[in-house]
Image 1 (cartoon, rainbow, N blue to C red):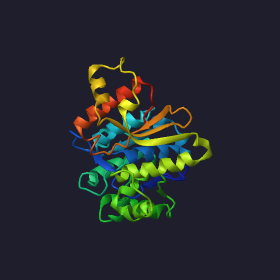
Image 2 (tube, helix red, strand yellow):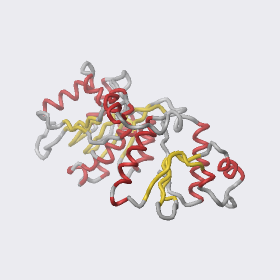
Image 3 (tube, one colour):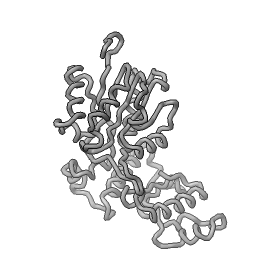
Image 4 (cartoon, one colour):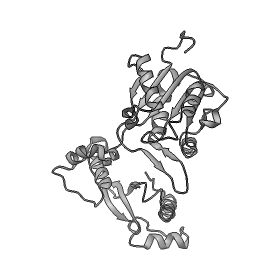
Length: 295
C-alpha cells in the first residue's frame, strides 16, 4: 500500500458459502478444502484483473501441505506458483492468493507470523479466501485482516462466493433448507446425499434437451457388463458380486443403452477409507473397459 497508483483493488476477500468444507485426508496430518480450490480456480482466477495477468506473477499459498498438494492435482500449476506460506518466505509475487483452508480459526493458521508472511508476499494485490465461519471470529489476526480490508475498500473488497453444491444442504447450517427440499417427496434411498441427486437428475431429465434419457437407482454391475472376457479375475469376481452396483445409471429410453454412470462418493466412506478406495478403483477399471463414462 506504499503506492496507490494503478491498484484499484489491492485487497479482495472471497467468502465461502456456509458449511464445513475442510477435510482431513487419510494418513495426512494437515487439512485441505476442495471448495476453496474450486473457488480459486473458477472465481478468483477469472476475476477480470487476474484473468489477464501473467500466471507467473501469481502465487497461491496455504498453511497446509495437504491443501497445496490437492490444489496442484486439481488445478495444475499452469505456471502458477502454488506452495505453503512458509515456502514463500523471502519471495514475492505481484498477486498473492491466500487460502486459509480451515473451517474455523485455529492457532496454526492464525499465527501472527503466518498472516504477516502471507500478506507481505504480495506486491500489487492480496486475495484472501476464507470460510463463512471465519468472518464471525473477529478476535483473531485473520478476523482483523478481514475488517481492515472491509474498512480500506469501503466494503467493495468483500466478495461472496457463488460456488455451491446440492450437498451443502447436508451441513447442519442448512438443515432447514434440506427439510424444505424433502417436504412432500418420497425418499428412494436411505442416504440423503443420494436422494438429493435423485431429485436433481429427475429435474434435469425432465427438460426437453434430455427427455430422450431416463435413469435408474442402484443398478447392479452384472446387469451392465455383459462381456467379461476383457476382465481380469479380480474384476470379474467384483462384477458378479451382488453388492457391486452403480448408484445412478443414465440410459436411453429408446434402446436402453447406458450413457452415464454416477457415483455419490461420501468423503468419509470413500476417499478416507482405504478398503473402499480399492473397491472403487476396481469399479472404475471395469467401467473404463466397457467404455461407460463415470461422473
